[in-house]
Image (cartoon, rainbow, N blue to C red; front, side, top):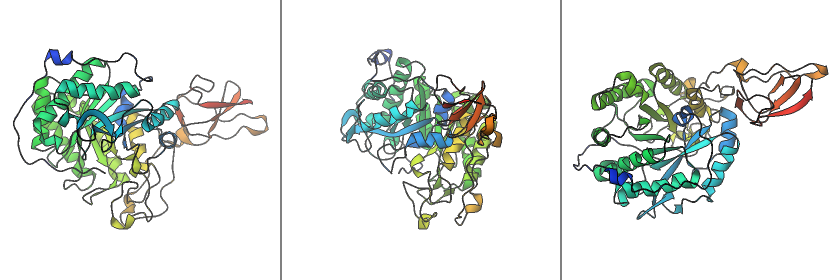
Length: 425
């Protein structure tokens, strides 16, 4: 579980990254295993998931149920809190191409998905705090990119690292190095949000990025745990953050929105705010209207209903504390990426505020099961503009086909293997 607070104090140091530092990191040309990169729309839509804690879900099943292909795995920290080497969670599980996380990544990639890895989070000691330089921080993070063949990373810069300007300079400098040494890599920088957009330390971080000449794919704020109430307060904070970005970098509002992101928290937050499915839909609709660059949330581990649904008014790391179907909130990320999630019926039970708990809308023609072609007739014709769930039946080129996974624009009989041939019809 992570929690965020607005920054309230100031520290003053600035570290610049030189061309020599950029050259100091050696990049392996043969990562442990590689994959084909997804489109950046998927990495921009990826929700967070803890692969080793909080009852990790099977992401292949989440993909099949929602259509969301990408996930941000959290969090990589400094090993044992003291060593400039990457490790999972509290720093006790060293990153390896053959570790428990690698097997989860392989399984997800086998069904067409992919992951980013997030460095940081609220708890534990971060690499930027112990590595001693931007180049050393980059070298440690490059180990993770190589181990998992990554195409995307996230820097989740929070306390206490967030308040340490030297550590932040190392993290941003490292990201700049990685951006140069891994062409095409997707990089997001995620920071605490406030009702004014972000706090003093957030603005200082943006100033550091400007001084380095570093521009990630997205600067993302987390508008929760800071006096927020519903979607309107989050949208207001995002609009304020847009003004901060335009002022800092001299961008137009549209350019700033294209480099801006939101990472929300589903259901009950640490400070007892509540964000329902309708809140996610409202922020999504607004985000799409302004061309927001990223739409994410914390966390897939929590995208399940508790028992009882309101969890007796308490917080959980494994369920949302609101009435929902499993993976309701992840479907909004899939919609942001441009997919049409499979249809799920609305929750049958209700919490005190469950009137707001409707599932994402989707096109019935895109996800309903086609009629089976019995008696020699063919099933409904396959459509390149529809999405299909496992078990859906279609006809194509005189044969009936059954989907064995969620898919979109995957031609029956094609190389993806998303369809089973049921024979001539």
